[in-house]
Length: 363
Image (tube, rainbow, N blue to C red; front, side, top):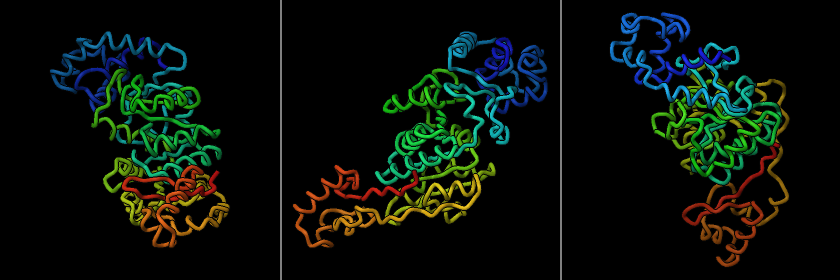
């Protein structure tokens, strides 16, 4: 880690209004370490970054913010890692726009681990959430660190599953690292800080802003060897992460779904474009770790003998459709669905539809 004086210089560069990552890299290329940049004459700086930004940089307008960040970094479990540090994640050095520094809480060593991103819709179906959690659990138990964006839905499910394995998990934020967003994930944030890690390139106190989340996605893809998309609509932000992964030379994986589900459209598009189709954790491990995948367990579990589940199949449908398929009355079908829902075998969806929840046996 840098000494406090050098870290303060890094912070001054990253906090300078209007400078940005490209400007920082130009200055580092021209003059060396941040302390050397800040010791350079105004005229020399202005020739690289322009008169106005050079004036703001030398004025040290964010001195109180620098001090607050140094105080934050001094607290146990907190760290600020810069481009010049030996522990800076090597994967991020390979991307076109590596963050100049990273704020980290928790197990910073996980950033250098053998890792996979699992991402998907914030409004995942019950089956999608179950798939994400089960896959993440199995992959974490196999030693992979699971990276995601700590959003609601698929991201949160992936983090929860990964916490149950030795590989653990890393959450990459689109806010300041001291901002819990979304608030509903507060407990999950605490779990990651204790047993995994959270990371952000944004200054302390940065609120959620739409423009920051695509930037966050390049860090997710940059940290990992591959990206697995579990559920995503055709215009999902998860596809940005997958695209960046492909551009960065990472493997892209996708879980297929129902041809009738809007949340399968993005995954199916990725598969058409060459993403590797994933039905089990072995499909991922075979690519990232090597070896012969073990056979995927059969879906023929005991609940397959339940008549209503056979009529339900694997696509969502409503009570009227089930009545037509089974010949049972609506009251009987509704009672069966309630029991199956209580057992965790069926989930209710918007619009009065139901979908079976499959345990694919990846753990």
